[in-house]
Length: 115
Image (cartoon, rainbow, N blue to C red; front, side, top):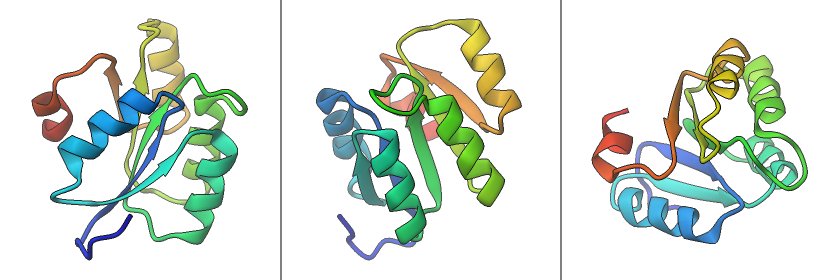
């Protein structure tokens, strides 16, 4: 969904409620693209001009950490990892693979916008 904003965000999460929450928080200021799977995320990333990626770690097909590594190998855009797991090892691995930040779920909209 594009609204002609100057910045676009690719939101990758298999949970409909999380995607909807992110849409409500971000839609007024950003163009948003949504993916439920890693495969869909990579297709959108390859075909659209994306400025930021919000990426869940736990996806049904390709692990979010692998997607992070793939995107980082192709582009230096900011990647914010999202996860409900809360495992500090995932955070460390995500940052080592090129994520710029990490946000545990559930999160406050103000915290997301601040990052």
